[in-house]
Image 1 (tube, rainbow, N blue to C red):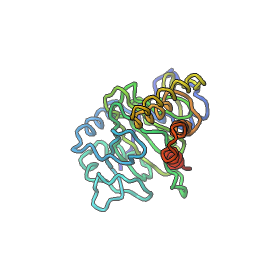
Image 2: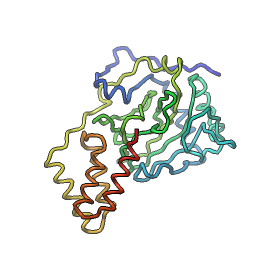
Image 3: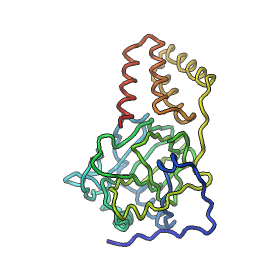
Image 4: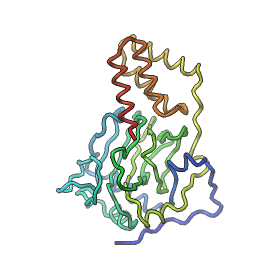
Length: 291
């Protein structure tokens, strides 16, 4: 197993104090060598598969994953259901020697590793992960390979752009969502790892830089009224799914209380007299935000 080398931190690098709640949920952990990132990017873009659309209830469409390390007995990269255990390299990782060496050099205790692609005009709706996994400490690492300024993570009432050139940590057991508005595709290498000494060393200095995060505005009564009016108009014309997405996207525009976007949809359907749809979204909120 190789030894992972990180890029040196630039002298005088400007960091920012984003507040403890946000820093707990997302942070840079280390800078990566630019040439290494370019080589891993080339391998990922040259992969013979885009992967598979999975976890459809979490997204608008456009979210693809391909496993690099999983629990498939035959190394199938299209087995993309995340679970506990000691993973093995897939046939896709075997075709990506630079990425394989990078992962080995981290010296971490892996649970699952994948490539994740979010296409333009696509959203991962507000949700939390690991709800069914409680027996061991685990963490999610992101290495952005391709991104753009409109590709952002939203969590703790803030919008965070996970830029290339760094290894990031996300706490997915907290509510979060992702959007990519303009494109190109957002392509990340994502590794779920267990807590151990190697991880603690890697995560010893979490930080964000100035410009990484922007606080979202609080939704006013007037804002809510405009959104509900627009959604109601769309629903009355028969575009119910579009009306729901208008309200789901409010999560990315305003600092909403957890689950509030789902409550807005429930309110929409209650006002329409559709108890079935209201109950469906009440259940969706419970499922997507389960602790």
